[in-house]
Image (cartoon, rainbow, N blue to C red):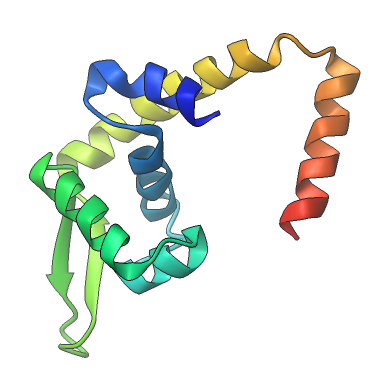
Length: 119
């Protein structure tokens, strides 16, 4: 799946792993590097490097919390917010092409099985 995501996002200069981080930020599932590390099961060093790359690309920004200086919140930039729906659609289309090899019933069954594993 990551290969399909990588191929879909290549024209935008992003990887599937980077998109996964952007998706969590865009959907307000995570607000800090620690949140993202826990959610995506990355070690903190790897997450910091990934966030550095995304910040260099201008799609995220990190801001120290006004309430607690130890906390650094992560947000999509205006550019990231603007482009995120386009990236999401590219990924959706790429993954849809991959799953076209399965019948509708098989896709439903796979979705059910995967959701049981994630819980």
